[in-house]
Image 1 (cartoon, rainbow, N blue to C red):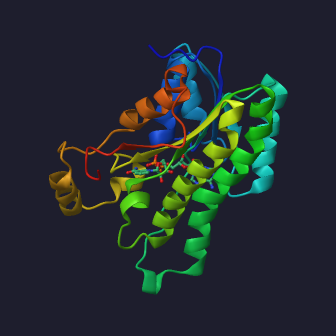
Image 2: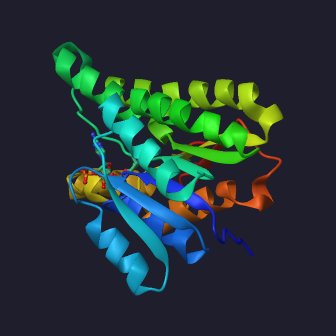
Length: 246
Ligand SMILES: NC(=O)c1ccc[n+]([C@@H]2O[C@H](COP(=O)([O-])OP(=O)(O)OC[C@H]3O[C@@H](n4cnc5c(N)ncnc54)[C@H](OP(=O)(O)O)[C@@H]3O)[C@@H](O)[C@H]2O)c1
């Protein structure tokens, strides 16, 4: 049984999809969740958590802006004095074949998916070292493991997270901080809603477990890695993909 009672957990991209499911599951297991997204977009997530008897607060942050990240982490530390769990989940896709990909689309995806994880992780490490422990989980992707035509920018950002996690894990293991990645396959969220029925059918046929994943499938893996049960796991990539990439 996972017990995260009283842990302070910061989740980016908490307004919908996977980030919302992660926030709700962390809160259901006792964590106090800081749900971050742009503007007031995480309001519904926070309302749902509080409605279910959990504890959560909203944070307005654009993770592609390093100053906003400093303000976010500074605010959490001011209010709670510690930060136990960081989930780097916010992410975007700007798909295009390489020959046509615009530099802006490369930059935006790297900034949101990879550089934000660098800034957030750097901001939480000092407090985690001071408090003698912490958990960092980055949401990578099966695309970061196997690549995908039309997603060179997205694949580079998600593969980058895997190298990032393995490197930082080695740096901070002696401080009782674990750093891991979860690599989802195709998950039912806004990000994948635009996929046509025929592509969805093709994917489903190729997935050994014969279904797309749900945000809750990913949330369960993140909660495990955030828990005491996973205290001997670091620098790993936990694939939650129905078996499509082994
Ligand atoms: N869905 C999949 O099949 C799948 C598969 C593998 C990996 N993933 C990864 O899982 C993560 C969540 O994906 P999802 O499917 O839940 O996506 P989603 O439904 O599109 O949600 C994306 C989340 O990221 C936030 N976000 C985007 N840009 C941001 C920015 N600049 N600043 C702050 N927040 C920002 C959004 O918040 P706003 O309200 O601010 O827009 C939203 O909460 C992503 O990293 C994605 O790459 C998804």
